[in-house]
Amino acid sequence: LYRTALGITSDRGAAEELLQDCFLRVYDHIDSVDGCSSLRPWLHRIIVNLSYNWAAKKRLRLVSLEEVFERLLSVPRSSPERALEREQMVQAVDEAIRALAMPQRAVVVLFYLQGFSVAEIAHTLECPVGTVKSRLHNARKVLKRRLQADSRISTEIAYELLSS
Image (tube, rainbow, N blue to C red; front, side):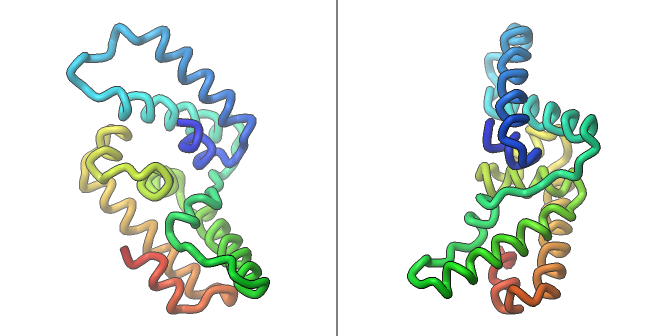
């Protein structure tokens, strides 16, 4: 839950506060949980909504996490050159993800960072599976286009990064 909030807000303090708010809401509304349904999507839906509200209040564009990049591409840290290359790629991916629309960014965070399936994301965000697939597809296209245009990342790496 914390990583989801952090992935959406990119603010550790806000993520901690949102996590506390999430648990307060859970405590207040635990009786509304259906015993048959999974608690995980319900909790993530609460934290996503709280994060959206936080971003709207702060009028901030959502920012991505380095961890999203880490899940997309692992670059060995075997030499100073590779470390510099990795840092440049992290920065480029972070900037590209930062430019995504909020709904696309939420799907990217849940899919890559949290490891949710498309069906779990649909359940969590209360939208059709097709909508999640569309948002993920469009986010990948936007990211790929931006990364291919970025001189810090080779075209081959941009393609590999988002071909999944």
